[in-house]
Image (cartoon, rainbow, N blue to C red; front, side, top):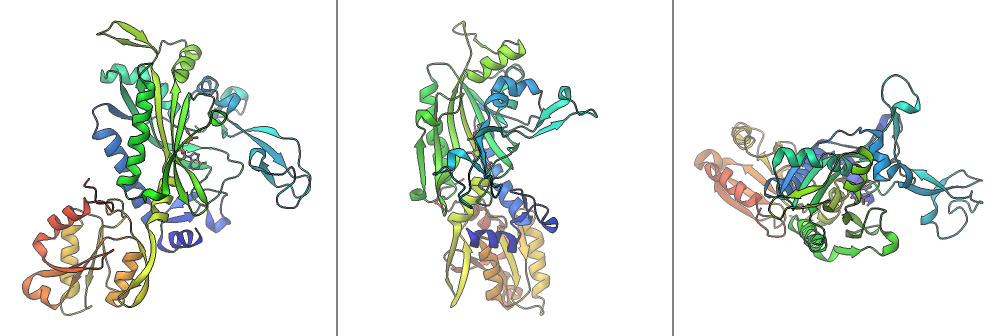
Length: 435
Ligand code: GAP
């Protein structure tokens, strides 16, 4: 993990939030390469889960919601972790994560455990009284439930169908950590898939498999991925069943995504608290029912960290040690880098002209600093799948050398074929899956 965190900072994937002020606990900023990687992940999810499916639509609900939402959802009463303090060193811990009844840092005596609500509170409007309390949402899901009827009326979808959303969530975690894994501000990619009661278990199985395969499609190693069913004692208050897609991080097997059967809990709660009917009427069968909900709920930071960990490799290239990120080409922040062999003799002008053509189609970089080997290495380290070198022959026959990141194989190619060739090669994933 230390190597990944240091690469992330050095190359501009992830910086600590407010670093010049000493940093803010477990909040992170995505740098130029990090935001490119994050966008590629969220766009892949949006494309695969929403735009390429006929039974899914998207939504972007506000982060701030009516406070009654959190009463209805159960978050106000139940979204808590058991908190204990050390009486001696004052450090705080989650009681359910301790193996002994003493402070793991100094051995001191611990306070009684008390429930600590993880929602961040703020005030809407100028008066800081209880009437104006609002919460930063701890999950995007509730924005989908409260819009269920709106979406249904506007889209004329029929059950089964789903609503997907990507957005920020906030949790005042007691023990954040492991870099991007557990943070206080994070992004989620959530689906609420509405089904007829009785068909929920088969849809739950379908979504477990679909989401598991999604991680394989973008190149996570099969042996480091698993689906783990929750025991009944682990289930959230709303869940009838749940399975996690877990990845074997350097700090152990941990959750990337939870796929829960939320039953009809949320729609029933919101019906009761809002007084609005959130049932569904099937015109063909003349049946009315409150749909069950299958919820595949992923973070963005955790999959991003898993893709980085999985892609990280060290090997030897052209006689030198190199760090290489073997990222799936579809996720790589930069798709190709263009290098003039020399900084004279017309090479930079030709390389820049090629860069200008390619940048209309792909995220590309231009680099003329240092030896060609070092330039390849710089791009390998950030996962750029292709390096394109302009040399003396380019000026004579309009061909370039294209070097592939993983195999380091080089082929000669006419400049006017570059766009089509790169497009074809970039659509094939690391796992050999075509987009
Ligand atoms: N709506 C259901 C829900 O939010 P969850 O298991 O609490 O379920 C879903 O969260 C996903 O959100 C997790 O699998 C994880 O990827 C991400 N997530 C949750 N808490 C997080 C945190 N503190 N930091 C980063 N990601 C988090």
